[in-house]
Length: 621
Image (cartoon, rainbow, N blue to C red):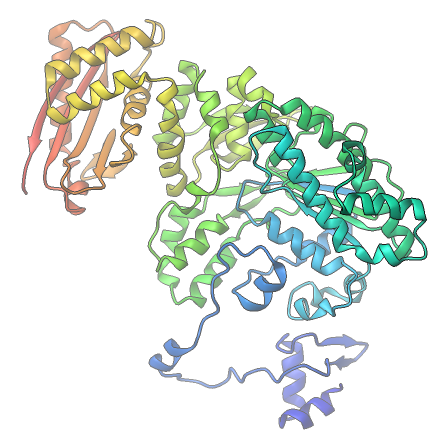
């Protein structure tokens, strides 16, 4: 309808309607030449010019629910608070690579974005414009809107393919593909599909297709859709590398690689029945020849600028979300806990944790820690070198270091070359790239660090606790018992025995190395304690603090010192210096502020394979 018709229908002036169109307040309105065109079903926008709304009335306004675990774009964009990422569509259509791969850490919006692409591009009987008329892509122009609903779409997600055997994995993948064939049952009635193709289609739907037939699913289904619709389809594959990771951990890696190579090559390599392809995953595994010969693959990693703001939340988006949920004063806390990622040139917040924070009444915690398995990290740490352990400890101290990064790191490298753990930690979200340079070739030299408080907590809980495979369980239990009892002689003897069994003289290089070992021992207690390292308290930064989750347990503070070629008296002096530092700098103030009144204080000094310990108990205020 015209501005005049809208003004008459809504009982306001034509000038006011024109202002609403210009400000983008009317959903779906666009300019055709000099005239505004307004959808017939457009609603009159609420009048935001009303001033001085009473606080109690504003508080009573109902807020949209948070999209916790919602990966369905239709629901997320129409029923929940949705952070608009639809300009991803515009940027893609400007570039139009044949096949795009997006690699991002888990829970950074990959699945929701892929469902958004499907909803926009897919040809259906539903008018899907309703889900985009109030979004940024709609205001970008008619050339982009013209692609809405124009393509048949093949869509699968492998995010839940986490089976113990190849047989179970293949069976689940077959069912996922069979369900996608069933979504296109219009092909069974199509006069454009040959009887031979319908026979194949029925074999897949009835579960009678063999492994070779299933491996050709993308190629065959795309061909039939092209023949039926007259338009080549779009293929979207979400979390394509989950079955490959599972194969690596469960011993059927080669079988998974062989099958997935055939499946992807058929649909994406030189396929005349493909308009565009999209894939998401955590790792880029092109080196494994999964995409062998696929010269039209455009990889978008976390170090690339293009599309960098569409996975995760930007600072502006988080500030707007905080305002909406009346928590603007919490922005700095949000930054401290969940900011710090850098994708390309864009600072990014963890979206899963931001949503969790608002849902948790703005109380911070490590929401991301329970969103996936870290089996591979444990595998690498099982063979970690002293250099790796020392570098991991530097990260816990809030420091950074420069390392070689290969964004195409593959799963076998993690066990064959433990130093590749830094590449893996970066692409999976456990590190951030503070600064990076790309020399000739495809790899990078990156300065890396921990992103934020959340990852620091996750790091100690989920990564350092994996040191159980490095630290003998019996040794850890004995040391822990001596800690609780404050049996200094027993603790010293057990520490020295542990050092004798696990390190050589050249390993015992400095305080950071011993810090890593003790922190690993403490991390094995994390079901009873929250372990933090190198944090500010009182008038300095403690080495290790153990906050009891049950206040009936004592808090523990540990300060470490290391010396070279120290004799017994020197070592005892270092231990006493460490203990006095805890008191002089009032490190216990943080524990006391959290309601812990019984605190065990330890000063521990190391030299080579020798240790000396000084301790005291603090009770009450």
